[in-house]
Length: 131
Image (tube, rainbow, N blue to C red; front, side, top):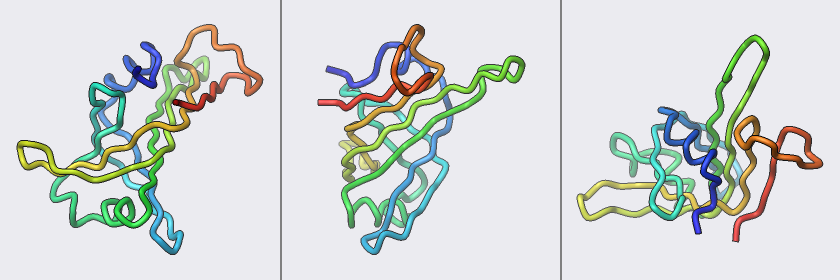
């Protein structure tokens, strides 16, 4: 089962950039803008130019965790923010074409301004645990 709603998936695939947050083994945080894809299982895939040389790669190898977010403004008038945030286990792998990826498996998903009619005690922010 894919972890995202249809509306969340549609939003994510429409966006060109996201941000990945990682931390080192000594808890030093890092945040990096990235391009991304979704795989068929709804995991976030992050790559780039020589990803194995990046801090985010080393942090994922060290901790096995990452957070990822995509957000924008659907409108400035009225102010209409929307976005998706994911936290979960992360790993690194090389695909059959020799490309290197960071893969984030959603464990918790927050979204806002995406799912029409979402009614939660968080107000406009919907939070759910996957799995």
